[in-house]
Length: 300
Image (cartoon, rainbow, N blue to C red):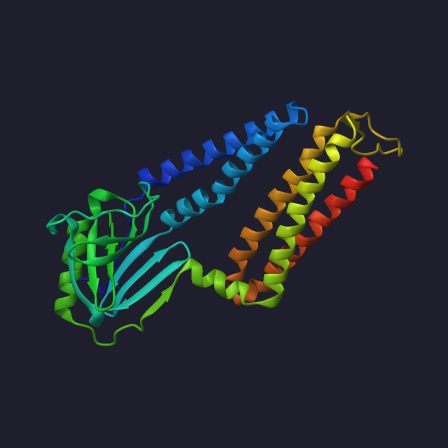
C-alpha cells in the first residue's frame, strides 16, 4: 500500500451548484443596480440599492465556498490525517485518531449545520451520542465520522468505503513519527490580519470612506435633477444626465473595496507577497477618497 493516500471530497454537484448561485446573485445584484438607475429619488431607489447590496455582499461568500470545495482534499498517511479546505487546514497525528466509521453506522442521524448547502456542509452541530461534531464535508451520502482525542469531524470523501479501509490499514501499520498537530481556520487568519496595525487601519478606513461616499451620494442626488459627469478631451463638459447616474460612484467604490480586500487577503497568506497586499489595501483607501472628490466636483 502507498504510504500516502489522497482523497477528494464529493465536489462536482456542490461546485456547480455554488457556481449557479454565484451567477444568480451577480445577475440579481446587477439587475437591481440597473433598476436603481431608472428610478427618481425615493423609497424604491433605496430598496433597489439595499437589495443589490445584499445580493452582491453574499457573492464573495459563495465564490469562496466554491473555491474551497474545488481545492479541498483529505490526505491519509502513516504520520496522520491532513485536511485542506479553502483557508482551513487541519493536521491530526495518527496517534490522536481513535476510530473512523461511516455515518450510516450511527444510531442517530447527523444534523447538518445551519446555512448548509450541498457542497458546503461546514460548521458545527450537536449529536446525541457524539456531542459536538464539526463538519468539513460536501455530500450527505458520503459522510464519514472521524473521532479524535479532542474533536469529532465529519468528512465526505468521494469513495467512503475506500477511505475507511485505507484509514484502518494505516492505523494497523502504526505511525513512526506522527505529524505535529496543527489547525488553521479562516477566523484565526482574519484575526492575524487585523492584529497588524496597517492592515487594520486601512481596512477600517476604506470601509468607512466607502460608506461615506454612499451617504454623500444619496444626500447630494436630490439637490439637482441633472449633472455633467465629466469633460471631453477638449475640456468641454459632457452632456448632463439624470443625477441618479451618480450612483455609479458608490457602486464602483464598493466593487473596488471588495476586490482589493479579497485580493489582499489572498496575497497576505505568503510572507513574500504581503507587500503587494499592503499596496492593495492602501489603494482601497485612496479609491473612495478620489470618488468623493469626483462627486463633489460634479455636483458643485
